[in-house]
Image 1: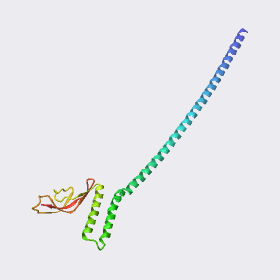
Image 2: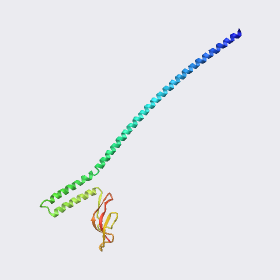
Image 3: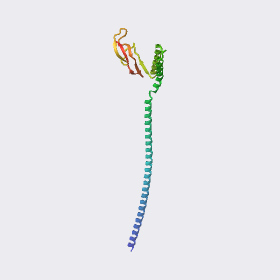
Image 4: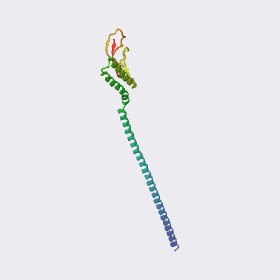
Length: 193
């Protein structure tokens, strides 16, 4: 009988321990479930933040791309404008010389025009044009009497000349021109042998 009682008590203790263990297990599962929910919430929150950040970066990239496109377009237009009107200053400077030439032609056609007045008008217009060229760094090459320089002169012929040293420019057939020290056209010359 006492043995039976002992067995029943042991059985009861075991059942109580099993119940406690099951209760503890259930609590652990609930805690695990809550932790899982918290992790899920954190992941969703982080994902939402990452999506917001990605959207911001995408927006910035689109704005930057639009800015670059606008800058490229403005630069192209400025460049086209610069090419189109690069000679405007030169044309502005040349127009008065053209006006003088036109007035000279009209004056030359009048009956009272003399050779001297026509020559004077042509010389004034020529000087105006030389001034315009000089204003734009165009240098005239007139090497008569100078030593022949193959960099700036083109020898058309060589002649014996007792009055000149050898390799001296005796005469200039056509004047040469330089733009900002770069040769545009060589002076065509006759050189002493």
